[in-house]
Image (cartoon, rainbow, N blue to C red; front, side):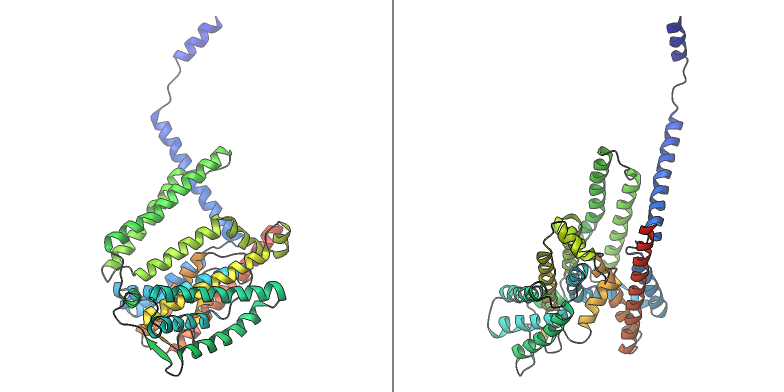
Length: 424
């Protein structure tokens, strides 16, 4: 009897409606979006602002300069801006490394000038192959960075003092290498000079490369999602993940299309972005990168956790000096010369300011390679906008200084908020 009743109830049950299934999926999608927004708000409240302040600042800067001079956002001006970003931006990548471990390198400007002088002397005056001359300059830079690390690890000399002494000594080496002439002109029309002034990524290649970041976000997100589901942890919504990839792809494709209305995407800037991507991967997805953040956050705790702190410091300073030397090479290619003025002036400060403005903490333990990219775009945007308005360079220094001060204040407040949130 019971079986008959159950059978009757089963046969009489109403099948699930497709409308209900779609409604349920919409509810899940809305819940996923709501959870993502809630997580983002919680991160901001806890002091983890990420790149939000610099992106907002960049929008404000571009809006102001475009309203004063519409040429600012023209394709040709943006292409020139990207060329100029590449040289100091590469130097700033190295600054991110030393700031992550809570140290500083004040000699990156002099190192870049010395590297350009070394390349000019070895290539033009001594007849070395250009690639060998560039490699020699980068190796010398890495050796100087290793010396800074040795002074810190073995003698306990603060990096502020050792790199300040290095600034003066390397500047002397630069003047010595250049000799009485004071400058060396690089062969105009050579591949190196064309790379720094003329070479553009072909339009088809640029559009294909613009597809890669969005594709990478989706593939990495899917892999992470499967791992979290396998571990029975909350996983991001699939539709939200796909939306992020599509939006990023559309934005990058539009940017490339707009730049193609001018000369196109500079090959030098492409190399800079490639280095930033490689550094971002190393800092976020390798044991070395996690050790860098750990040492910057708490050196003693990192040592007790089994991290070779001295080796981490050495790698940070070697990378910083090596990137500074490479930045000097790119500067020589951009200017088609190596002179006594290379690496002087505001190169040193702009490289440090770019990393800090982009979001790398002066207190160590927090930062990314993208800090250098965003920060140098902010600095070069200010310089380009003021140049188009035919205003004094003194304003550029004052505005850049104000932006740097605001970035440090935001970093300090965010750090205080994280501490307070952690205690709560």
